[in-house]
Image (cartoon, rainbow, N blue to C red; front, side):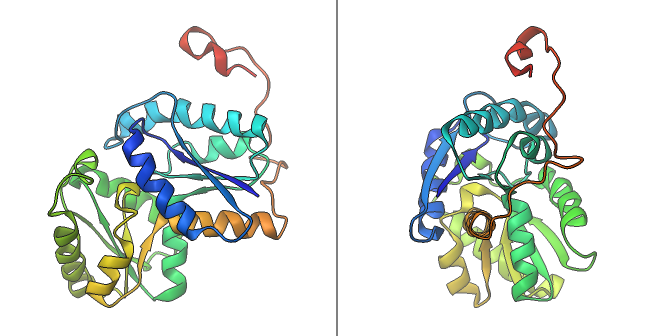
Length: 242
């Protein structure tokens, strides 16, 4: 089985962090290939960034289809381009926010999200409203560390632990969801500190994608996720015409 884990930003060092978490979560016989988006922003911290990350995501999925990938994980907590990617893909496509939030509801009655910048909290709430029951996401909290600083700031783990502890108390939650793919290497350490499940969406996404492939559940091509109708695109998007 071949799973492609796509980092929708263009920072290769973050792809390496994502790859380590993804491979650790994969089962026997699963080959994980972590892909850095071929175009787009260096990090995704705004609606503008998310919109401009989508072409890179779609290019990576199209390449995966040519290479015979069995499934995909989109490793950005905003799940950019998720529905569009499903239109292109034969196998399952899983967003890490989607996977993490669903997983959290299986191990606790309520979860809190610990994310990066305050301005991204609204997007996380929007996704929670789509993915899980109304009372499942008890709060979204930002540590105000820019995405590209996660791998270099020595205070990251301490700040995530402190924010997670405060979130559990304030929200009355039972699980912490890490709200950025760049936090993928923190799950076990933060869980040990807090004494509750801490869900990394990269690992959860790989496990869910793998399970869907194993049970023979591809992306449905009836209705909304059918292949997009053929038409020309112009300008810089010419190559995306089908």
